[in-house]
Amino acid sequence: MTLERITRHILDQARQQATEQVEAARKETDDRLAKARQEEEARLAEEIAEFEAGLERKRRQETAKRRTEHRAQLLRLKTDIVEAVFAEAFAKILKSDAYRTWLRDQLSRAGQTSAQIVCRIEDRDLLAKLVDELGLKDLTFAQDGRPPRGGFLLRTEQYDLDVTLEAALADLREQLIPELVGRLSEGSGVGEAG
Image (cartoon, rainbow, N blue to C red; front, side, top):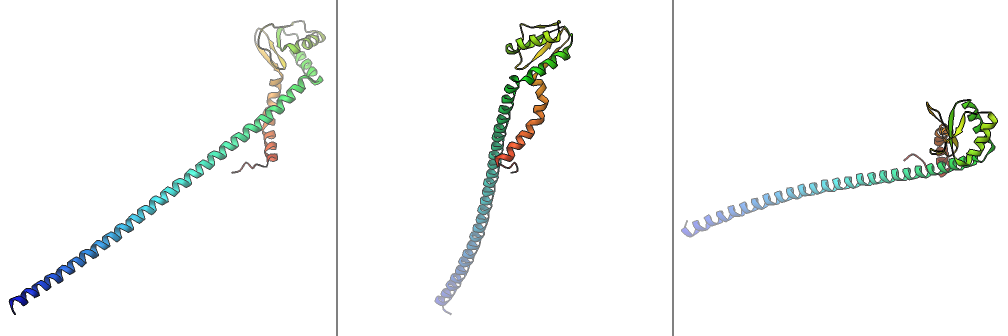
């Protein structure tokens, strides 16, 4: 073999090895890139899934918040309606004969107690007549104090007795409010379940 052939043979072998090494490096690079791409796609998919889950949580929270706000608003409306019903009933009671009878009964229970009556100005004449009718000489009318809307406060030296219409109706009110709100719910067409 001549020197030229030997040189060519060595160069061919070197070229062959270089080509094989380049191909191996290219394959390794392609594999690494493919693996990196897969990892990046998996990471992106995971981030997208987390983002979508976060959006879904936020949507549920917002829906629950709005539902709660709506229910609170509906409850306020129902409570306002019930309050209006009680206010109207209260006003009607104050103008009725039953109110006079109730006041008379309450005064008769006071008996001959020495006390002062605190009442609204509109009830003073009626209560004075009832005090006279019942012969309750130890009852007088106070000039001070905050008068109740209906009924009266009975002040003695030992205690104050709340004989107001509001106090008398408080238990009834507590019993009726859930029932009235329930009836309003039935008639509203809005379900309470979410």
